[in-house]
Length: 263
Ligand code: 7PJ
Image (cartoon, rainbow, N blue to C red):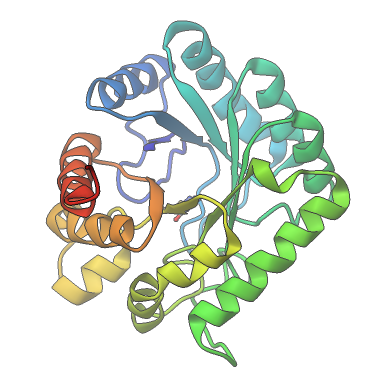
């Protein structure tokens, strides 16, 4: 899953892809490099980012989704928590919803259910604005994530959104310390007990910056190491900025994991 930010203030490639043509070219390049999904995001979830209205979000996202669907053979995912945005992008032909708030916004559960689309549910406690303020959990982080996702799956099923449409994400970097993130990755295989596909997003995140003391533009190698580990622990979709190198890292990891399995 290649990341396509259409936010003017995204932390790592801020403002570069705001123009629709630029966005299209960037998506095209990610597909050529082996991406299977393009994840379009119009709301920055960076800690401390200014919230925007659903209409502003739609103004950024809708034209890009429309053109991606029309002009490229891509599965378009939309990173949104707003029910208005979910409805409209489903109408425009998006193929997946990715909600860092796990459909907890008023009306989101219903909008996602009606869309008929697959949905990624992600673990996050609090809101992007306050989540990094002294994150604390009463139980081991992997237990907290497991319990949370299990509850969100139940809420979806109660609303009529079938379990088979769900993808789960531990939410690396969302309301977690570096120690939480490292532990969660190490124990990510615990989430496999829920029996749903797992998605992981660690590309360029501050957990890499903190461990390696690297600025955001020097986190590729660290991110590839994390991608390989995530695949080994059960992740089947990786949300990344650098698609080409990530595809190589994943395919190499996969070759090792498949060794000896074929007759
Ligand atoms: C994630 C996301 C993630 C999912 C962002 C960033 C912050 N969606 N949206 N998982 N992160 N599913 O890319 O650094 O980890 S925005």
